[in-house]
Length: 502
Image (cartoon, rainbow, N blue to C red):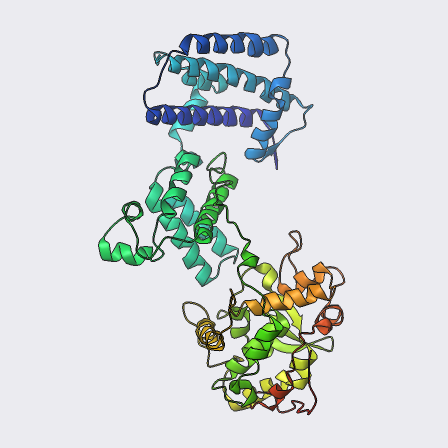
């Protein structure tokens, strides 16, 4: 962070004071008439506070009253100063004057007295006339409109290769909705009340908002006032929108467009955790899933229908991570067969940076079902780089057909509960936990960050260690020996008479 200078003191005090008084005036403009019988007491309290606290500290040259506020102000503006430094002590003393002028002006406003302008006097005291004029006339961050900040945010994210095509579309959809509701105004005028208004409105919006806007010709505000036959946005969808707004306003704060992020802490409380939304599969579920005529009678139409559930169960990988695999992503790392989950090409996307990882393959995958051998077969027979060339990429990535197929497959078997393809991931994690695998290893396997650490592996957690201390402990208690007889298994698949129950 930058060191505090005298020029910084002038700048941040003037800016903070003006923003505070602007917020107060906006509140007064909207709160409506009220009983003023308390005015004499208010007057005595204000005068006592000014004379009894502020003037006392100023007269005794005691700056302690403003120490905590000064530290907070520095943090919000990306500045630092030693508490013993002259600059920090000057800032504290000026803040006490700030409070003195603030309460004077608030008291005058309480009486409806706008005949004087202490705000102007304060600005004049903090800055020489020529400097104040330069701030008012010059191009400044404060003049940036919301649309400009959003565009700068998009350019910044794309420049850092932090956005994929799908992510950009979803995030910009949320930000365009925010822009529509709050209006394209200077970003430093957006306060918590406006963000709260945005939150209240989107909670009443239909899931197919854009479709209904196009059909009915209504704004988001207008649709929020209408009853929707299709229900309203789910709480987590609302929180996604709020999170994206918080991110762009956090960018605005970091870039100096605003002093504080007004979206901080804005969210809807959700009763259940996201990772509890889907249940794990029971042993009975797994028996049903892998005991159908498709598996026992080799009746799968496409290779992905054979491989995807098996890979989901034994790797814990996400559906989209598996559906977009390339042939070269099945390889050996220090003698261990692994899935290399990456986004090294334009047709692949990962959820976040920690999703890039190596997952060792269980012996049932690498040996009994001979996935490496199946990969060689695809290389020889088809001109493709994809493991599952029948899965083409669409708006939802490569996994849309898998989601539809698996949902129908599950429903046909009568599997109940909140269970989807993602339940394989939960089942995988639950098995590792049940067998006493250390949580850092489980997080590495799942692609979860460890206290903010982003890397393929941390410390000594190599693919070999993950294989020996985690993957080999998987035991679902289900006989899968019949899978080796399917035509989509590799040519070296071990067709045994005895049960295989990893």
